[in-house]
Length: 338
Ligand code: SER
Picture 1 (spheres, rainbow, N blue to C red):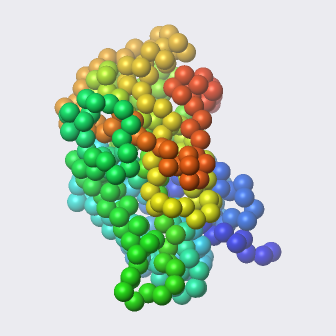
Picture 2 (picture 1 turned 30 degrees about the horizontal axis):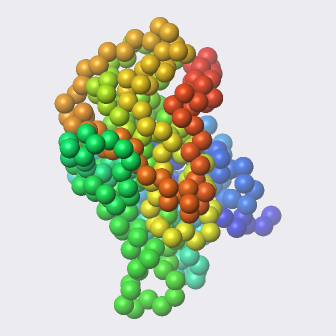
Picture 3 (picture 1 turned 180 degrees about the vertical axis):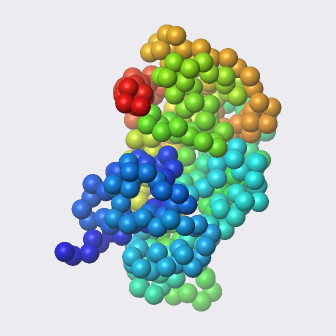
């Protein structure tokens, strides 16, 4: 049997995006799928993988071994500590989010140079890179890619730096001495809050809406940790997976980093829309001061026109259609089966 042309390494495969992404990637016969995670991702992920390596992305020798052993051509780096979790262990978060990404970028560059072939690299970034002042937040509306980049969280600071690090490896690597194209083709999606019906998030600060959805479907009262008016941009997990694959597969793109989001909605708006599907939904609002303060620095919405223009990103759903066409049927199926 011939070796597949695309040999893709996915880190953090056990996480929420990992679940969706590995199953989408495994349908391509030209892809060999290799995963790294600290823990076993379970059968639902494992069944789609050609190989699984359990270990730490901060362990350079381990990662180097995996990348060279499989002659990896693309890396999708999902392993990260999200914003709430990162505030409890900021130094650890820096290690995983920054050192882990640096490790992988460095290994990707070495791999590219030794095989004389560019390695594609993508890592999700986040709306946490923004840090709006109360006045800027009160203005509402769409925030551009280069505006208000003053993150207040360790996670946001880590992600903003990783965008810059990726831009360095992807556009400016060893600019004084390196001839030829940069070794890494770096592409990054700045994600909004992501809504998955089949998995529950942990450790994020945008978790209030996914938690509300899962509480609605499981008939559990929900105490929301931010106020009713708290508003950020969102997309569904199928849109997140599709746009990640679309960006990975696009021809050369002019920017390294793109905003994506489908709709903007507050906790109260989601509650009202969810109630039309789950009339018994019980939600109370008990804002946690720290988590509320973090989310208050994130934009209500982001400008996605560059993604639409440069590689055909298409926001598929608004709040109502996302609920009726994906979230509600899928979350009902999920709770019927579990
Ligand atoms: N979902 C992330 C978090 O809540 C933000 O992008 O940390």
